[in-house]
Image (cartoon, rainbow, N blue to C red; front, side, top):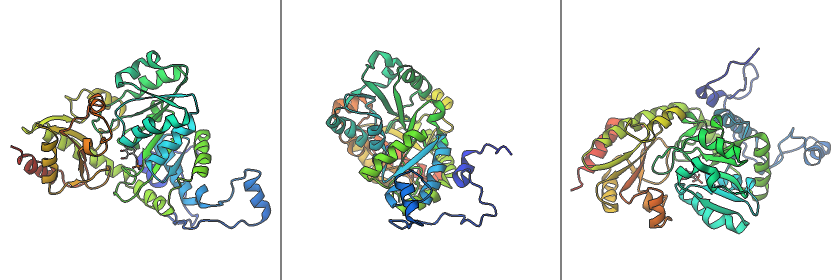
Length: 395
Ligand SMILES: Cc1ncc(COP(=O)(O)O)c(C=O)c1O
């Protein structure tokens, strides 16, 4: 019998497993053990020497519940396999170091999560890897900036914090013509809103701390790609050790089951809030790809299944005005991070992008009056009323 292709909401709950009549637990248990007993020495030799992966050996090498989680995540992103880590940064650093070696070059954009930027600027050169920052538009003319040394292209779309959208199909086509591997950080979109692998991306990374975890209580990261590449990342992580905690595996399995409903509602709430802010007299600009007047609207419609739960907007004035609005909010919380059930606001120039110089902020199109909003699951009327009262306190 040919299996019926499953949609993301189903895959996030069941994956491709069939549990009927097997008496397996509906929810995989938490494997809180550091090590596993082998039936006999031949099985140990089989695992260690002959590479037979019929058993589990040690927590740093994974556990049965982690396998279930990794299979589900790969299905959601349309990749062959996935590997979970202790944080998004662990996933990002492991991925990049598994692609590049001494003498290689990475091309990337200036609009990235701040610590990813710090890794590229401050760490990669220690491995003899060079990094070239290019404006987003330059990626559409990749051959004019790439060299023989260029082996990797890394970007985020939508970008953090200002929701610019990059055309994945166009960029990956150029990269592949030049033999360059591509990585996208899909944290902002989640696999519900965007599946970059379907558009030609080789490797997807996430801060699973965000939408995948979804409740502001987990720190984790994930890499999705080919089976061969994921195995390479696993081998590296078995040496460096950025292992995900078994309890976080449990929390992520639980969170994935509601990913589709959470993200759909966050998309709806964000659109309502963006429309409200877009016509507010105290708001200078709104950056949300779901607004028809947004320059990325058509591209987002083509490439994404939903416009996402993230908004950035700029108030009239500067950092002081942005701080005043944030400090006067009554429901929304002034906290960094995103993707949770509660609406969080942050000012990028003093949080996620604090490490950028004035010139770099300009290049990244991040202004001091910008407020980033991760829209949660509260009633949108309450969120609008909260913004209304806080914005009206501005002169
Ligand atoms: C887009 C993006 N990528 C990666 C990260 C890093 O993830 P983590 O905090 O889980 O290490 C973050 C964290 O804020 C992020 O916003």
